[in-house]
Structure formats: C-alpha cells, structure tokens
Amino acid sequence: MTKDPYELDVRPLLKSGSDPFQAIMSAVDGLAPGQPLKLSATFRPVPLFSVMAGRGFAHQDQPLGNGDWEVLFTPEEQVDEVRVSAGDTDLDTWPDPARQLDLTDLDPPEPMVRILAVVEKMQAGEVLFALLAREPLFLYPELAKRGHKWAGNFDAAGETYRILIRVGGRKGHENAAD
Amino acid sequence: MFGATLSRWTMSYFAAALIFLAIGEVMMVLGFGYPVSSIEAPETLALVHTIALGWLSLLMAGALLQFVPVLVGRPLSLPGLALPALVLLVVGITGLVLGFVSLAGAGSFSPLLLPFGATVTIAGFGLLVIVFATTLWQARPLPLPARFVAVGLGSLVATIALGGTYAFVLAGLSDTQAAIDLTLEGLSLHAALGLGGWLSFTTMGVSYRLLTMFMLSPDRERQSSRIVWALGAAALGIVACIVPMILSGSAGRVVLLLIAALAGVIAIGIYMADIVRIYRGRKRKLIELNSRAGIGAFAALTVATIFFLALAVSGQIERGVGPLVYLVTFGWLTGMGLAQLYKIVPFITWLECYGPLLGRMPTPRVQDLVVETRAAFWFRLFYLTVIVASAALCLDNASLFRVSSLGQLIAVNALLWEFVATRRLSNVPSNLRLSGGFARPHLFFPPFQSRRQP
Image (cartoon, rainbow over all chains, first blue to last red; front, side, top):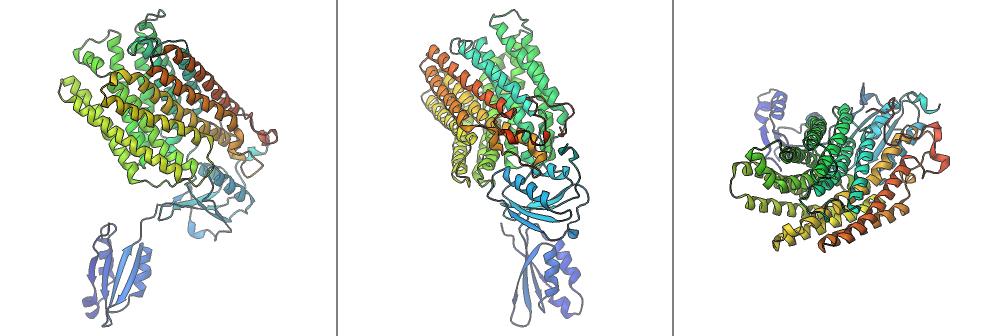
C-alpha cells in the first residue's frame, strides 16, 4: 500500500532568502501514516537527512540537472514498539554488548536456559545482546526477579526478536542457596 | 510489566478435568448413556455434560488461564477470580450431572438439582468470562489467536444461556412458550455453539500459536488463518442469530443453518491446510510426542468433517449424529487435550521447580520430566479405541463400544499416571531432581505461601 508522496517545493522560499525548515517540518507533521514526502530544493539538503532519519524516514536524492535537487523521504517500515523492563531503563547509558547470542534455532525453553546461564557468568553492568525466534515471555519475570534490566522488540520483518539485557547487582533469590 | 508468569490454579483445573474424564469413561464402560440409551435420554445428557463441561471445559479454562497471557503478552486481569470460578464450576457441573441422573430415574435426588447446577455452572463460567474478557479488552489490538479466543468466549456465553434455559424447562420451572420452543428446536444450536464454538474454535486459535512455538515454525499471521477466523466467526454468528429467529418463529432457518455449516466446513478445510503447512515448515525436524499425538486429533477432525459432509449430502444427519459427536469429542478435542497436556504439565512443572535455579546449578531439561516411549504407547491405544468405538457406534454395536471404552479408560488412566509422575519429578535423574534443596511441587494444589505470583 504505497501512498502518493506529498510534494513540497521549497525553492521559492530559498530564492527569497527565507529558511524553509519550518515549512518542511509542518509538511512532515501533516503527512498521513506511511505517506512519503517529495522535496525539491536548490541544493542537496544534507543536514535534513539526519533530522528526517531521526523521525523514521529514509531518503533517496537525485540531482535535477540545473543544480537543484529532489529528495524522496520514505517512512521506514513500522517496527514493533520496544518493550522494556519496569523502572528506570535509559538505554542511552547502557554500554555496548559484552556478549552476543544467536538463539533463533533453539526451541523453547532452551533460549531462556542459555540466556540465564550466560547472564549468571557476566559482571554487573555488562550487557548481553540475544536474537530469538519468539518473544521470551517467561524469561521476563525471571530476569526481573534476579534484578536484571532488559529491552527488546521484533525486527522490521517481525521474525526475529532482539533483546538487550543489562546484568544487575547480585541480589534477589537469596533463598536459592539455602 | 510485560511477560507471563505461571498461573496459580491451572494445575488444579487440569486435575479436576482429568477426574471428570475418568468418570465419563467409567460411565461409558458401564453402558450409562448412549449408545445403550438413546441420544436424547437423560443418561446420555449426564454423560455428555460430564465430558463436555467436566473434562473439556475445565481443561480449556485451565489452559486459557495459563495461555491467554502468553497470547497477548500481558498478565491476566483479576487472577483472584480463578479459584472461586473453579469451585463454582466443580459444584455446578456435579449438580448438573446428578440432576440429569435423577431425571433418568436413577438415584433419589431432587429434580431442582438441574436448575441449581446450571445456575452455579453459569456463575462459574461468568467469572472466567470476566477474567478473560477484561484481559483481552486491555490488550487490544488483539493478535489473531486471541481473536479466536474472543469468539470462543462469545460462543460460551451463548451456549450457557441456552443451556440454562433448558435446565429450567426440564425441571418444570419454566413453562413459557418461548423457553419450550427453544428447548425443542434449539438443542443442536446449543451443541454446535458449545462443541464447535467454545471448544473447537478456541482450540484452533490456540493451536496456531502453540504448534508454531513447539515446532519452531514461522508464525507470522497468514491471510489464510484470517479467513479461517472470519468464516468460523461468521458461521458461529449465524448459528447464534437463529436463536431469536426460533423465538419469533421466523422462516428461513434451514437455509441459514446450511450457510453456517458450509462456512464452517470451508473454515476447517483451510485450517487443516494451515496445520499441514505449520508441520511441514517446522525448523525442528524431530518433533516431540505432544506434536506427534496431535496429528491423531487433526486426523479425527478431518475424518469428522468429511463424515459430516457425507451425512449432510445423503440427508442422514439424524442417523449419524452420535458417531459424529463422539469423533469430534474424543478423537479431536480429547485427543488434542491429552496431547497438549503432555507438553504443558512438564513445562509448568519444570518452570515452577527449576526456573529460579537456571544458570546457577545443573538443572534437568523439560524432556527429562517425561518418558515419551512409555506415553507414546498409551496415546496409540487411546486413538485405537477412538477408531474402534466410532466404528462400533456406526454399526450400532453397544458391546463393542463398551469394550473399546474399557481400553480407552485404561489408556486415559495410564496417561493420568504419567502426568502424576511428571508432577512428582519421578522421571528426572536423581542427581538433578531436587538440586538446591527445592521442595517437590505440590501435585495439583498450590502452596498458600507461594513464591510465585498468582
């Protein structure tokens, strides 16, 4: 279901010397879900690419021959919302993963067994990145009980579940050893 | 919080369900109800409700308490209602069955047991419907398997509303013309909504999720599965709409029933194609016994559907309805129920006992809690008895039916014993059994001071 792009020509604005940024952003806000934006400008609007990427748009640019550029911004396929563990989970402060696991070929509950085994051997504060074929619904409560934080979602194709687990301090389950 | 925890009362529902199944099998061995009595006889109604409510509905309710959170990825709402619902259902179903027994002239129970049992049963189901409906409502938009469950719950509400009406009419408490008309003409609707809607349609929806999970098959929502849902929901909706038509005496009910039957048959056809695709598309080449034993149930559903078509085309539905209902109830629903219990019981037990220990010390695998070769024999015996008993019903041979029911009673009890052994961790190698000093799980009743969340 491809929608017709909304066409916005900011060349008159640029030629009159005004900043087209507000016009572009209000055009983006007015887009229907899934609708692309076709932008015409007098130069290649490189700074805009990262702004639009941050709003979930990919870009394709082509010169129009007379020094002008045309850029097609297409909304990237919706990915699942990220599910995160309860409490304060600020992913920006997490370090890069220290361990990576591909568990997509294992049947449940083996991915859960492997993840918990690896997590037990990691240092507090380290992060594990794992790929699974299913969302590990029974793993979440066990991670929470052991004081670990997590964040995960499906990839854009909806086939692989990606989870980041940050190992918490050693607490919880004090009764496991008694 | 996202995620699914162990359902506190599921194992108790399963235990009650299996006891009702064993009682039902004993009734069949003793020749209580069809085929020794007629299909309409009170004895048969006692047997049918022991199986459909006591066994299959309690099994379904226990399974949904555990799996609705898995289907929608969020915890159950109002989990505290699960225990009162179980108590009401066990009391209500027992009262209902004894009410039918007293209608049959056996035993000297009050005839009021029937409406009493029905009312208490409806109250029990009512609590469960509140639990599931609230959970589903809060989880919108629903994934496809959960939409099957929603339609199944709607069918359950319609089924028990009809059933409650019949109970009051049969006990002589209601003599309004509308209620009597419903009792005379609506019985097939009650059976279709109960067996086809609540039990079968819900099983179909849950199977989409469980089978792909157990066999590592692709589980993206397919267009064909959505069509199964739409056709099945339409068929059940039409059947439910016939109830007000009976009350108003409108014509055209036969045509509508035919349309509903056709939609239902097409839905089952597409569903079976989906199931074959799930089995073929699995990443896991060696499949476990629950998935192998499930094949027998799918075969029974296919044979039952073809049998239904043949009966409908030759105009002999009345004559073949006994074997047809038997095949659906025992081959498809009971076969599927026992097969999936063989996975669910060890999984729940394993998670309960070893979940907190995972990664910290050596723990057994889920497969270590069962001995598949032993159970496989009992599943074979079970399906063999289903085939022989179905043939016996087609041939009107009550003795053969009772003998094969005896074989089925043995198979069911052997499987029941396998579940007990699993709960007791009897099959786990002794060096791994109770590592960490964890206590053995309670057989079917949760401890009152549990570490688990309800």
